[in-house]
Image 1: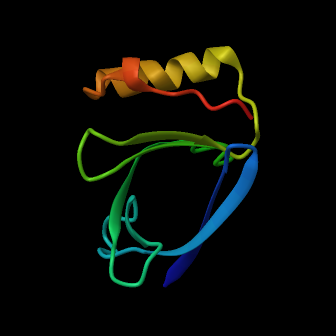
Image 2 (image 1 turned 90 degrees about the vertical axis):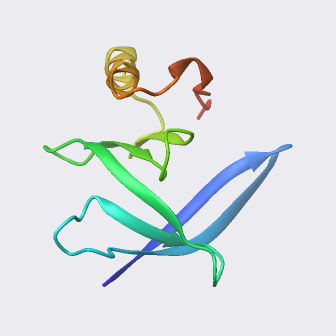
Length: 104
């Protein structure tokens, strides 16, 4: 089973997208994905927190504590939710002072 992943962002006013494919390498641990944006290179994405109700937000880390993403299905989340997600990341040992909150 594979999942299409589309990462997009704006750099110097230009929106860019890149498509990748995610795989679940261990069917008993569906929160760990291998994502490939380039044929040979695969990166580990670990879902460490997921909105269990509607999947509206997720906290993802790489294979180390050097990478962390807070993602939402909507461009904006409440300040209260954002703060709770940052607090969660801090409780897991992430240096939350390095988080860059992207303006949507």
